Length: 94
Image 1: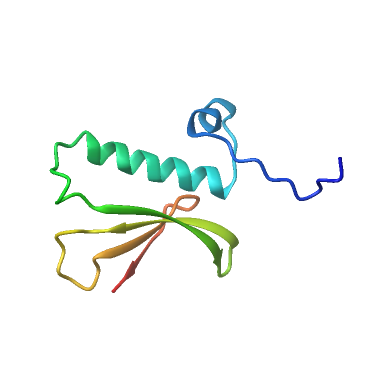
Image 2: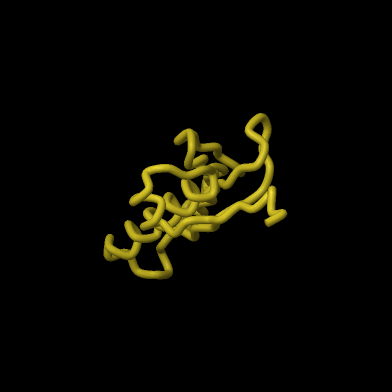
């Protein structure tokens, strides 16, 4: 078909059913899981952390997706966390 660079993203359910995926699927699944945990933890919406899906390039991994968690009530320099869903590593940003 001439689509050598075609990259189709799975839904979270498709990713779990297939049991395989790359950085996009891992990032989306982690974001959705963290969001689900917040919804079901009975935290009022004003106090809930803000979650974002960050798509870009990282060193050394290249193309990557991070989940950014902004802690709403934190007043420290570590109130922003970048989660790498493929490795489980977290980076703290001030």
